[in-house]
Image (cartoon, rainbow, N blue to C red):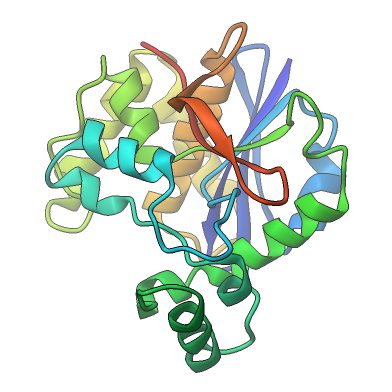
Length: 243
């Protein structure tokens, strides 16, 4: 059963593929369409980009709210609600900020705007390609810190990737090794062969999503348990695998 974990990177989309529980390969894709061309036959693709979007409210999605709750402080700060769909599809930050303020009683920060290009690309693709969002959906949203939390027995990571990067890296590798003992060698092999400016965190997060996708048996667990859908029918959820 082929599965894929995908994380955004400076060069586009970093994909890690597992087949029947074992690492197969990692590759960089310039856009979501080329990623789908290669991996569209996978059983499951988990991606660290918000999928279901609000259209007229800045109320946090239930999955974002629940993720912040289970991660607690300070890891919960890694989860932030996406802007409304119209703002995601704007061409520049000032227009997006004005759009967010027009449709909601909130605003739009530059950190969130920095990933709006990926949200826009994925949203357009999912709305245009019924295969990717079929029943069940092949492409589903996941969050690396929720994946680590779940694989660690529902216990959030202690170390920050920015505040203590070395300890954070090895803590997270240890969690993945408990599921796949070969993961460190696989991460090293991927890092040596990838032609990308992606960092260690990008690669580690893609592996976390791939290991999660590979670990799922039967119906996936989600935050929240009964996800809502957005006005376009896309699920607002985060997928995870229990330890």
